[in-house]
Amino acid sequence: MSIIQQIKVLQAQGYGVSAIAEALDCDRKTVRKYLQQTDFSPTMPAKRTRASKLDPYKATIDAWLEEDTHQWYKQRHTAQRIFDRLGEEFPERAVSYRTVSRYVQARRRAAPTTGTLQLEWHPGEAQVDFGQADIIEQGTIVRMHALCLTFPYSNAGYLQLFRGENAECVVHGLVDLFQHMDGAPQRMVFDNASGVGRRIGERVRMTDLFARFQAHYGFETTFCNPYAGHEKGNVENKVGYFRRNLLVPVPDVPDLLTFNAALVTQSEQHWARRHYKKGPAVATLFADDREALRALPPQAFAPYRYTQVRTDRQGRFCLEGQHWYSSAPECAEQAIIVRVGAHTVEPLAADGRLLTCHHRVYGAERSDSTDYRTTVHRVAQRPGAWRNSPLRSGLPESIRIALDQVARADLHAALEGLAQCADRWGFDHAVRALEEAVVAGRIQTADIVAVGRRQALAPVGTSNVVDLRRYDALLEGRVAR
Image 1 (cartoon, rainbow, N blue to C red):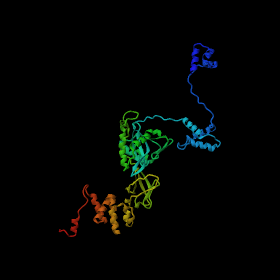
Image 2: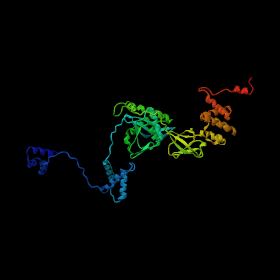
Image 3: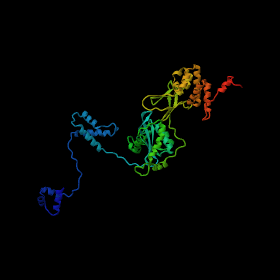
Image 4: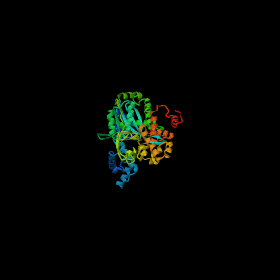
């Protein structure tokens, strides 16, 4: 640029073309060129293009990349796959993998993007999503599903852990959080979670349980577009935040329900920090969210679904294709109703009476859950099965030893007494009554029921042991009347 500046300076001083060329020792054509030029503004540099061995195949590669925009993002062409396809369809191609890779990278960098908008969230609006996290249960690491509820306006959030991502888990967790907050959000944003519902175009299909849950609390529901997690970025980020801050190191969880209750408090402890953009503390901003919550109805929603199943000859039924649960032997080969929750599976009798309660099992492997307590009546009817029954294995050792030695009639009487006490006061109470009857050496049905009644009617905090020796002596005639 310095030679051009000198030419323009000499021109301004009145020098002609020949004089300038002689003074600067340059060609007259060069001087004339710059004397005639009037615009020296910077121009955008033009990229030099040169022929490439890939030129004959670029149209084909572009067509493959265009097709990829209509496919699932996890099932699109990689540079390696494009290189391999070129070799399959154009055996004569003489280009290297590096050449193909550079072109694919350049095309993807130049591809137009839709970008994202900065959204404005109002008080009372919430986002819900699941993540994953590990816990330790009984010495084993278990992968759990972390349900996260956040309020983007204040950046407040809650975390709960479940074994699945079905409708029962979503509804159970949200009901507990609504009761804790004493209100329900005005609107909640979900992704296309199968446990809640699914958006196909403009049509949304909800699961029956979630639809009832929404009607119960009256909130509005919005579903994101497929593969558009950025539309609920607040909760996406919060899942990772809670995992790093509440679940590191990996916690040892003796009881999941108790741990979830503690997570509610631990989540709120993180509200003391300042909002990353607005300035005030998260807890202060959440006061606006709480003010905007919908009032709760008088009754809390029951987060269960009811399903009808058919039992086999042993009174067992199957859920999800691989998990088997016991009902009761008297319900064998019948259609029964089962109440299914996030944590429990409860078969019900025809009159609505609860037969038993199982812990719900998740996973792809087959499982068998049996409650031996439901077999009391059947074993009492068939005392010959006592030795090999699950009931015998579940009773205390003192009862097993005693009943193993009695005659069949006495065994039948003892088991019938156990069954009657279980019906009236519960199985655990019945076992205590039978234990006391065994110690006293009186295991007839009436004896066991009498002990059970006395234990049930005894005032709380008093001893159930009554000294009957004077009455025995009186009956034997050893005490004067």
